[in-house]
Image 1 (tube, one colour):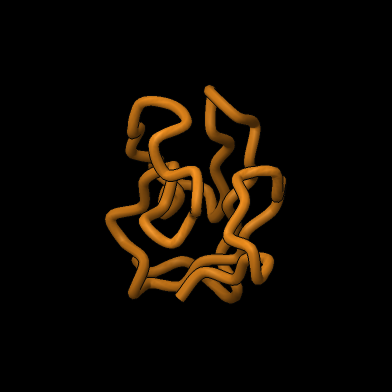
Image 2 (image 1 turned 120 degrees about the horizontal axis):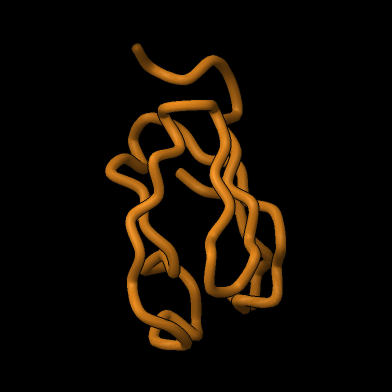
Length: 67
């Protein structure tokens, strides 16, 4: 499960994710402003982290990414 601030704002710039969040996309459903930009799927499992090209949020695995 991704961690985020209690308000669910899209202003957060770093979110830790787990294998249960795959396939990963931004914005995530838990974000209050989930419709603030088009949904984009991010290949976070490739390098263990991924940057959203729209809002700049960095998604990073809490532990080692799945193989």
